[in-house]
Image 1: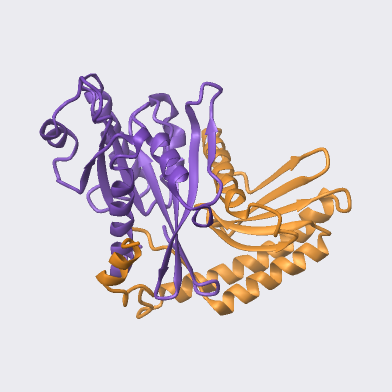
Image 2: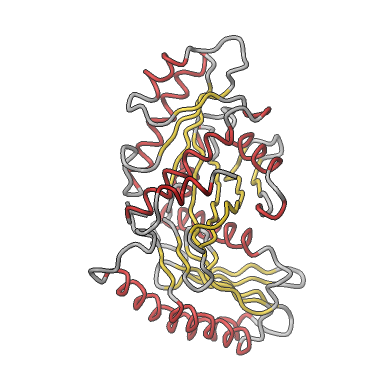
Length: 196
Length: 159
């Protein structure tokens, strides 16, 4: 749910990175944080366990520039991917403007990917959103690993609706900004339509 | 999709005024107002040294988590929360079901005073947000972004 402030001439939008445990959601945000100019970003917050698994969420505020005199700000969030943190995932989806699904390309994680997409669909529906209508892109991460599924297979399983999709290697940044730009663009286009 | 929050100059002035007055009346260090999705709406008092964006996001996370806990035990929500620190304390209060009023205070104030002043300010803020909701629901209140073009969006990503 975007927040448009006429007084400070700002527009704020919320983007959530979703996906199974250890698929690279936090790594996406860490790369964005590392490669963004200091003046365009705020502090990155990670609420994580002692073993650096996301416990509640990661948060990164990002300024993209101005549109017609309005500063555009994106708040990037990740959800905890592990199955048993479902209650937390639901909370983070509240007020979402756009979703990135980060899939783990490794063959042995296909079931976890599918389970996570279904979980996303269910949790969005509980908040009154439909995965078929919300601005949504898919990222096939870990393309550098040896035991990965082909993009065709991944598309068939995870992205039957053919939303924008990107191949990525999050630790080195391959595909990270392409994914972010794509979802940000979809969010702004949705706002233009007046649905945000 | 749910429609987003739109803040207009007039209401923003009223809201800032209420927050400023609450800061004074409650002897608070900082008062800020956050929407439940983590967007900062207004800040008053000694907020310049604080990372208000992070504060807003964590406030919303905290309120959401406590709301989840409330539902688990059969409560609708916990409308007021108090966290006591060694020097500074934090009071959070849900206003009109959609925004969170946060007061940070130290030994110069007290929980009783803060509670009392927050109650009054909360009622006033509730009325302003009702007014905002009505304004947004008025037929013909189109999206302020309706006029942007695809080129405007593309330009944002061209740098």
